[in-house]
Length: 326
Image 1 (cartoon, one colour):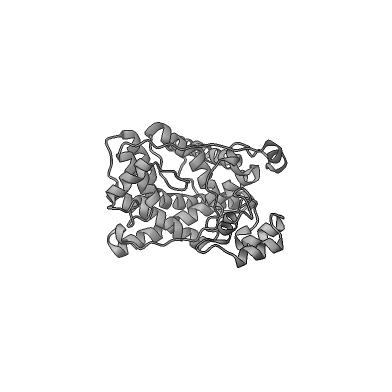
Image 2 (tube, rainbow, N blue to C red; image 1 turned 90 degrees about the horizontal axis):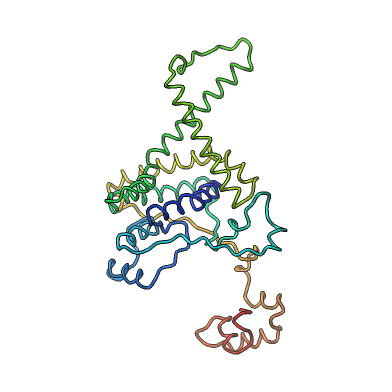
């Protein structure tokens, strides 16, 4: 489900930086988060020795608000590391060098319809339904605005899907009337109402603006091809969000209390730095391939392994490899 790259490109490229600038609050969701010792100590004191809310289905989202309530500073760091020579060879068309090389957590999200629905339904339960109970509206209008943006998905996911169905129906009717000379011509419900036509054109303009923004941010991270494909994936994303909303609502109604819904964790895969699957191969084999050690040294390390240490740590202690080589 490549809709994740579309949503996260726009979220981390636009929404979170704006949220930080206006409200000073950063949800610790979908990002690699660093905590100060003071922050961790405060969270541990809140939870009687447990930093995260174990009943929350989106504990990373929850923790951002808890730290904000304590008056702690939250920032969204966007720091790139760019190898210009390497980037010129590998960069995709219109892909931004700095944007696509941010220091961040990179992972592969669910790539099937059912797993994406399961994951997003958990997010909806945690952010919308549990959020209403645990994070009340605040005295800050700015923060309340972003809380509303977080929670409006419970309604907008349904409305967007229904609007998509209506649009598809209208496009099919227009195609039918245009391609067949003897086709029935259906009466328009929009004619004769100037204010309604004005409202429709304004909505159309806002929709185009949102689509263009998504294309721009996806292109910056992944290149023009993925940027253009993100327009087509809007329909697929609407379907996933619609089904996730239904699943979340069903689970909450079944349990009666959103905080009683069981955790439904989805499996994530993480890419290696070099792009290959080194984590699936023994360390000794990797060291041999890179000519860091000889077979004799590997045999010696395996026979004389330091008790309580993994092979890498044992070889480091014996001076067979350096920390940099490991």
